Each structure stands twice: as structure tokens, then as C-alpha cells.
Amino acid sequence: MSSSPNARPLDALLQEVQPSVFALCYRLVGSIEDAEDLAQESLFKMARGYENFEGRAQFRTWAHRITTNTCYNFLKSARKRREIVVPDPLETTDEFLKAVDPDLDADELRESLEFSFICVLQELSPLQRLVVVLRDVLGWSVAETAEALGSAPAPVKNIHSRARKQLRKGRPARRLLSGSHPDAEAFMRKFAKAHVAADMDAILNCYDNQSVVVSFPTTRYRGKTEIESFYAPVIDGKMPTLFIGVKMNGRLSAACYHPNKHGSLQHTGVAIPEIYRPLNPFASPRIHQVFWAFQPEHFKRANLPSVIDSAEDAKKVGQLL
Image (tube, rainbow, N blue to C red):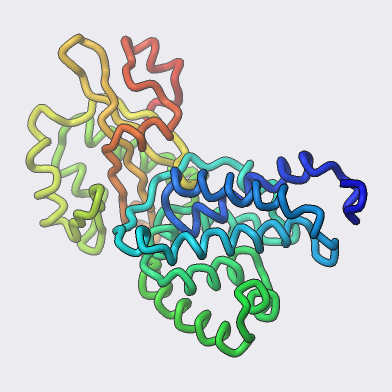
């Protein structure tokens, strides 16, 4: 590797960009398993092609270009076109931002890993996804994006414009509270208390008539009447009795536990809410949208145990809501 214009060891460079390579793959494909595979494939291509890296661009930019092409080929594959993508929740930490250009807005980068953004991205075509992520997330210019895609600037501008219009339709117009906002934390305690008490009125008071509940894989409930029908089958004796706070996709979320026949607490799902504050300054926050993930693999990504034996053990696991 001595002929390379970059003096840093290849292993160190790959380790540095791995988090952002994975985050780029995750944004584009929505599946954690696929993103992990594509990230590894991209890193392998970088290692294999490092001798050809001429140093005219930053290594990070070169790495993202390889990753973009890898993901684009995957998204165009016959197998992928047949699939209906249901994004996976992700336990996000700042490690996914370490290898990104420090001049980019960290808050915007975190928003681009939020679950609702990943969901809306999956509704775009593969080419639209690539253009949006390169332009709006990684901050690439039109010329850089066109070069990476082997296109001309004018088509890239048109694709970006159409994709942005579609994204605006899918993204909330409401101002959402960040996961670290104290009002969001207070609301989540209220949300958990209402569920533990199996108090339907208190639960519905967390929503409004524009709120949406998304139950994996694809079922949606909009407005209080439909949301009540979501809770009706479980409100009597089947509600979680313990909620533990966890960060999923950058937002404060709730891991739910329910008593099992052995007297322990068994995981039942993860609620990933988007919370907003109404324009009325005296009104309490409400849920704009909440994603209920019930699959075991989703719960594992919250990095919590499947079974908790006692209340004392629960306190050791994480922040009780």
C-alpha cells in the first residue's frame, strides 16, 4: 500500500468510515440485516480497490461513492424489486456520525436516521433515495452527485426536486419534540402510566384525531376512533405492566414488558413515538405518530433482556418510565 497517496493505514481508514458507511446503507435500504451486508461488501471493495484511490477526493467521499454504487445495484436487483420494505428500528448512537464530515449539521444528520424519515425514504425510487441522501444528508453538490451516479447535473436537479416534493408530503408538518426534550420525557412517563393502568381514556388523551399508530408490519390506525380499535383487544388484562426508556432511531422510546406464566416479565414490544407540542401553549404534547414493533429482532436491538425476573432487576436494566 506504500504507493497510495494516503499515508494513513488502510485498516484505520476503514474503521473510521465504517459507522457512516453502515448509516448510509441503512438510510437507503431500511433493513438492518441488508445494511450490514452491504456495508461489509462496500468495505471489502474499498480494501480491494485502495491501490486505485488517487487521493483527489477525501477518503470518506471515495468510500461513500463506492457504498452508493453498491446499494444502488442492490436496490435495482430483481429480488429487491419484489420485496415490500418494512424499515427496521435502529438503536442509534453517535458512532454512526463519527465518520461524517464535521462541517455538516449534526442535528440534521440525526433526523435523517429517524424512523419516520427512513419510512418515507422507502417510498421513493432507488434513484430518488440516492439523490436525496447524497444531496440532503451528506451535503454533496449537484455536480458531485451527478458524477457519483454517472449522470449529468440537470437530470439530478429534476430528480431531487421531485423527490423533495414527495418527501414533504410524507413528513410531518408539525414541530416534533427531540428525544432529549424534558417535555418529551414527561410525556413518555404519562404515556407509560396510562398503559400500565389500562386506562383507555388516559391512553387516548395521548393522541389527537390526526395521530397515527403504525403496527408492524403494515397496519395503520388514524384518529382516536381507529386507535381505540387497536387497543380494544388488549386493554383488558393484556397491557404491559412495565415500560423502560430506550433510544431508538434517535428518539426516546419505550420497551414494554408483560407478566408471563412463570412470574417473570417478558418483553412484548417497543413503542417508538414522535411527539409534538400543539400550537396552543396551554395544551399538552400529543403523539403525532407511534410505531409499535413487536418482532423479537426489533426488541433485541433495544439492547435489553428478553426476560426480567424482578422489580429490582428492572431498575438495574434502565430508566423506568
